[in-house]
Each structure stands twice: as C-alpha cells, then as structure tokens.
Length: 71
Image 1 (cartoon, rainbow, N blue to C red):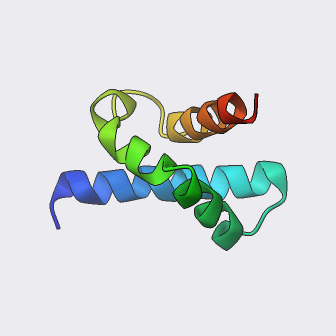
Image 2 (image 1 turned 180 degrees about the vertical axis):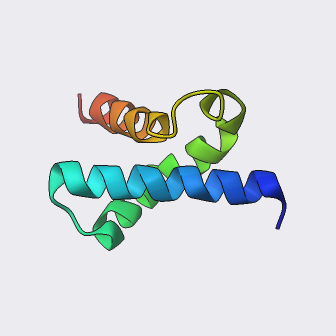
C-alpha cells in the first residue's frame, strides 16, 4: 500500500468517525451509508484537493454530498 492510499484511508476513517458522532450512528452504519452513496470512492477521487485542507474536510465533503442527495 502506498502512502497516498494510506492517506486516503485515513481521510475516509475521519469522515466516518465524524459523521457517526454527529448523526449518532454506528461507524458500521455510516460506512454502509457512505458505500451506498459512493462517498468512499469520491473521497479517494478527490484526494488531490482534500489533502491540502484540514483533515476534517473529508467529513464536510461527505456531509455536503449526502445533504445534496437528500434534496
């Protein structure tokens, strides 16, 4: 596994943990939600931009995408 892959995984873990805490979900339920909505792949695809931001930005990115899908 490359360093970039590890960093992408870290961003995903942070997003899952933050989303779980904010919305009172289990991490497993959050990961399932992310996978159903392709959030995990979107975080990886947007690593180039997200890695230049605060680590919590991956959470805000996921939250924004899910909010838009609910409209």
